[in-house]
Length: 115
Ligand SMILES: [Zn+2]
Image 1 (cartoon, protein in one colour):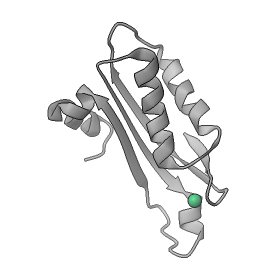
Image 2 (cartoon, protein in one colour):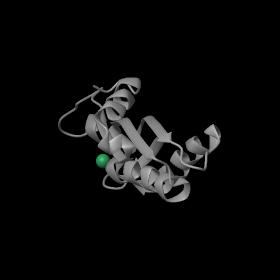
Image 3 (cartoon, helix red, strand yellow):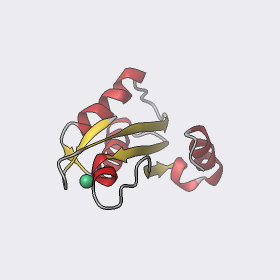
Image 4 (tube, rainbow, N blue to C red):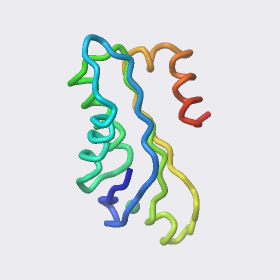
């Protein structure tokens, strides 16, 4: 994903991991990427972007569980003061089974490479 930080008007980019355990409705894989893309189009902060994607899926699919993890690098972090080049910010939003069941949560985080 890529987006624009609303605080500094500088890009942040990285990877969004999206998981859901379907209820009655399922969604095409390309649609998942599209939800991320559309939410990232506005000026954003990473935390809100993460919550918006999870919230959209929760609302439109009524799944048994939803998980979104975003790992991103912020240009405002590497350019300003700290010069924390290469550092990644990780945010997550979880609903349903992925929030409540530790094993499902761990599986998702492990698949996403976040431990
Ligand atoms: Zn920023």
